[in-house]
Image 1: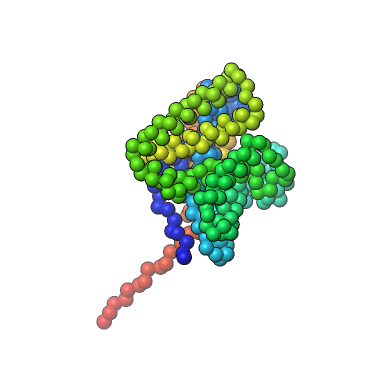
Image 2: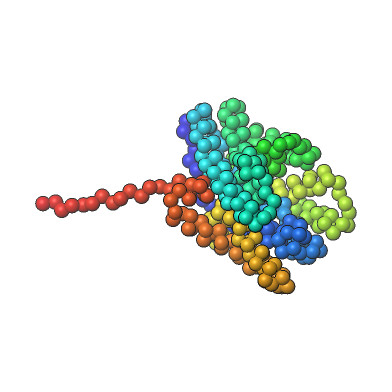
Length: 352
């Protein structure tokens, strides 16, 4: 049996990708703590908003990856080919972009790890790539061994990986971002189940049922976000494990709700078509922009800086991607794609 063909691009999936891009860029513009990004105080409304919605950021990327993923493999040859394709798409850009990022930080006098660690340990925001590659490779492998029982595997991974992450099971060294893989694996598998589980697919196709589930998920998500907001504002202090469980359910319910809403927003869909380039290159532009602002206009008003930083973080990678696609070898190194060779047109001579 031949491997299934890739899924066609769907407008609502590209819209969700675009939304995830906005969340990712906003996160790095605001900064994960008051000493990063815009260097906002912990009580600033932008900082509080970032903390409240942070659990949609990388989970949504992983959820979409799982939704479009094809786990079907029938032989060792298919498994090998699939892993090689994912290595080219994920790990080659991780090494190339990571090298540039490492060199930039080294030239700025900032602390950097030994260069060789880039090849087997998570490095900055690029941890997502080896973690996703690890998830996909293991999924292919377990699916082949089990005789393509992908749905059972996906359900088990949600429970096991989610449980390990909530319980904070750790090991060292964190080879190929394996600990980070525990964090995003439940969302990846949840997306896979929504795309492939028969009853879940049937649910999506029945409008009256979708409305009920959407209402239920919306109520659940609002309740979870209110609980998280209360914890952010120190109204109460949940335990570490309670915080992680809350974050897990926010991510799963939020991603599922967004899928069932199926938003189709052309602007976000166009952004979503460049999601990989935005992920890979946005930090160069947001970081550079904020460096200039901090140095030359430290008293700049927050909202214009935030809006300009997000715009730069989205537009810069799109333009960079367009340039890369025009260069030889660069598309493979920095985007993980092989450009099709253009065949010269056949000259049509005169027929006498």
